[in-house]
Length: 226
Ligand code: A5P
Image (cartoon, rainbow, N blue to C red; front, side):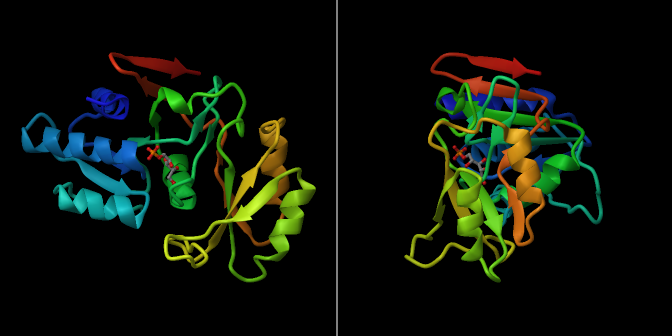
């Protein structure tokens, strides 16, 4: 079992029969979706409904037979299990390298508990230390955001998709991946500045949302709690 699989498997301890479960996006979240499907098939868990955070996790969940619902039918998840790109000691996160940050944040904010699953490579002292911060922006006038993001101390790179075209999210927006030379000194101030700017839809800063992170290694899973 890989560290990511180990963390994903450990997240099953938080799932109970009858729950509505937010399904994250990325390779670690995919391992959780598979583990959840196996638990449903074996009868260990019953009456589970999933809410996917991307088209990718929707396809994945459908392919392994997890019944799905949505926020219209179930406005709140009992639990969401998702990966992360960086996990700080206070459980603040960077997410969105998979491009699903907007739906991930909507589902996370409407969940009673957010459990993060990751391997040790995601644990950092300061956000922005390793990963760029993905910032989702409206297509209209997206070029104007580059200068604004620079004014906040970032080095923004417009995300390009696998085919060489500008990457477009499930929500029809673009992403700037924002590098910070010495990491992000004030995540809350940065988030406030981003929120005030028209055309910036959402950022991958997940502050104060996660309740626990399960960090998989070669042999064990450790926990970070707030
Ligand atoms: C998806 O948009 C991201 O927030 C993912 O949670 C993140 O990229 C983690 O991906 P891996 O689990 O593949 O490392």
